[in-house]
Length: 410
Image (cartoon, rainbow, N blue to C red):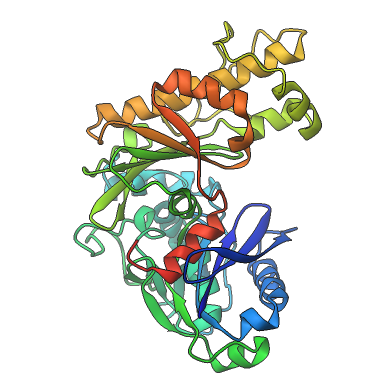
């Protein structure tokens, strides 16, 4: 029996899940991330690998990992970072918006100010990188540390760099002279076995294969059990991420909508800035639990647009879109009810937007993320969405990534 390890690099921690050939989880570990730096990522990965029990370790056959989409930096030929790390939500590339607009259609997912492409243009201006330097995503670099081949990515991580997942090429509007852009393979494709140094350090089989990874939100989709056109996954985390499995590819940057290739189908969706981060501004985890147990399941009369700060990506794409959190009732339960129902309304508007743009009509919604356990919120969402809402079969993105390593052609 061979085991597959999936690794999920999130904003606050790293999760590792080991599954067997029947896709059953057999071991899991979570390591907190105090910083978002390559050194901290690698340290957390080492901790996960060190924690794998010896009996499983000796039968490890495959490893894959996911990272946050759009977290990028430059490194030299040895893989050492030579620039700042621009995280997924870093907006410094807004300063190069005129050049980005000259190169790419405003409807393209690469046109966003936080896209990998915008960050590439910004880094070219700020660092004037040498021709032998590399532009890497978080998942690219961490995989490189395991298999030793620098400059390889997947067409999920490179979508917002501008790579075309349909024709499988970089368009000619992407500068490719310096830095070097990654060679792109299919998510889940076997890249190479682990290096001898990694094999010896962690007592792993030398033929353990490192597979191309994916992004965190797609990994959550792969974990859910969704597989038919019309199936969708809503990730209720710090933000609200919608993914709908569609027969048609839909891209429209005006609304923050883009599609990832998933086998013969397309995973279309977008990410709203509303979500759990807003709730944490007003409620402790204990308060959320206690109030949710008493939450009404009927619509709230309060009409909010819950955001932590100005700026929305989807279903409205406006960097200056204002939060709406008034009026705030004295009753905490009424306030929470209004926030959650408003988020459910935004979720419904998101799926409606995808349908209007030509995606396969919504049939069923799986739920992942911390909010998936809130039964009353699920009822509010089901009423707004008008389709069945069910929990994901597995809620951990690391599980979806492990499945990708075990069965590359999901």
